[in-house]
Structures are given as structure tokens and as C-alpha cells.
Image (cartoon, rainbow, N blue to C red; front, side, top):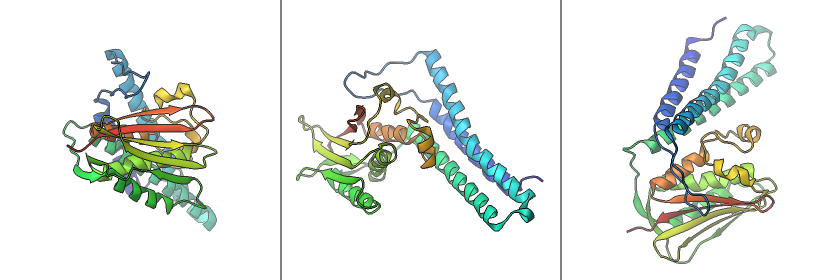
Amino acid sequence: MFVPDWLIALLGCGLLTGLFAAWKIVRKKERSLWGEGRPGTRQSRDEQEQARRDFVANVSHELRTPVSIIKGFSETLIDDYKSLSEKQKKNFLLKIHRNSQRLNSLVEDLLSLARLDALDVTLDKQTLDLSDLINQIGEDFKSRLEKDTPRLCIDLPAAPLQISGDSEKLISVFENLIENATVHAENLTTIEVQAKLDPTGKSVVCKIEDDGQGIPEEELDRLFERFYRLDKGRSRERGGTGLGLSIVREIIEAHGGEIVVQSKLGEGSVFSFRFPIAP
């Protein structure tokens, strides 16, 4: 028995949207990271072409997996509906719903990257106090914590930290990095968010530090690659698309900032980034 037209159209739209976003993204050159001992290198044409091929292959794989699951369970529901118990039907529908959410998250992240990569990208910049923004994010995050674990600590100066930025996108940066720590940092007890004016007075330096198990040194240079996951199984289980850190980097760089990561096994991780102060 064939799959209903509405389901085919839904999956088709998701695939086309994701592939279109991917096509826009791969046209953009990768930017270098700011950080000690990690200078950016210019890719050769062959390396750029290989990167484009790898990216499109990753997009196709990530889209195909939830689509195949949705298709398989929906076909079973249609073909064997009368013989299935109510518990089995509900279980199948939950799997379809969960994977449709995963597909939607992936498409949304691809579109976010495509918009950030566009040459005509515009930010809704306003002069804002980054301290107020971080306090707001901290309150929102603490309300979602269970039994205060992990503990979220916020370290801010008394003086305002004024930058020119898009508040919604900046909120996305902090939430993404905090959530990333809760998902990947095993044995995590504390996350510290810090922001301060750097000694030159020209930029605001932010740090998000956790006391989890840390990241192997050989993995650090790949963290910001699109679709790269340290723990593929755990990330997918929690709904991760492997694009979060790429989006974080794009937003920070769109604001004229830079981001680096430092980590050692058993000693936690620190994501450091900075923004120019408001003119």
C-alpha cells in the first residue's frame, strides 16, 4: 500500500528545503578561528571541492535517516492498521513524531546557516548591555534545571558591557553553548558564564566554562565543523543536529567577533569569544 500524498509532499518539502539550504552554505569559504596556536589556513581548490562534496553527503545522510524512519513506520501503520494494538499504534506515532521533529530541527538549522552565510545577511543590531542579556539567559536556564544540577554560575562586572548586537541571535549563542555543555560534558556539576571588558577596552570577552570530562585534544580543531559530533549516539538521542557550534561561530563572526575552545581531558572545557564594544 502506498504512502499518502500528504506525507510524500511533507517529506519532499523537507528534503528540498534542506538541500537548497545546503547548496547555499557550501558556496561560502570557511573562516579561520581566533586563538593561540590555531592559525587559519587557506584551503586549496581541491580541498574546497572535497569539503563541498563531504558537506552535501552529510546533509543527504542526515535528512535521509529521519525520512526513512517516518516512511517505514507510516507504511506499517497503513498496511497493518487493523492488526496492530493500540499500544503499538501509539508507539509508531511517537516515533514518527520524534523523527519529524528531528527533520524539522535539521532543516531549521540549515536555513539558519544559509541566512548567516548569505552575502546580504543583515543583523537587527542595537546597542545593548550584554550583562542584562546574560542575566536574562541565566534566569531562563535556571528555571529549567532539575535539582540545581548542573549549577549555573554567572560572573559579571558591575559596570555595563555595551555592545552593538542582535539580541535574539546573541541569546542563541549563549543558550547553544550552555545547552551543549549539559548534553556532552559528562560528570558535569558546574557551568560558569563570565563576561568582562578586555584590557584594551576595545572588546568584551565572554567565557563559558564547564567542569565536565573535557574534550580530547585531537578533536578540538573539528568541533566547529558542520555535522561533526563528539558523541554521535548521545547527540542524536538528545535531538542534536551537529550544526549548533557552526551556527554559534557564524553568529559571533557576523558580529565582528571570534571564538576559540580550550579543553583537556578530566579538566573541563572553556569556550571563549569576544565582541567589539559599541561605538
